[in-house]
Length: 126
Image (cartoon, rainbow, N blue to C red):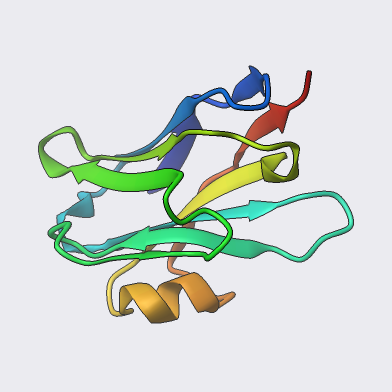
């Protein structure tokens, strides 16, 4: 069974940090671009950051540039999202997605993906 499983979410104070992980089971991520999306209540789903299969190309939403960093460790079949200087408006459910044939720019903009995870809640509040 092909699965993406997110972890690392939680409650953090404004200005704090979290690192999210997206681990794949049942398939290797080596040939996939991986993206992080988020959805807050009452808001549209937003592409946060995407990374290509070898990690050489990344894309970020303007709202997280300079604060979030996406990376991947193909040996561990895992992609990470390091989130620093968190703000209350970063509160959302964060999902990871996997696509074989999309550029990082397209992946972060499209709603259709090969594989989806179930999501992990991130809450930024004092």
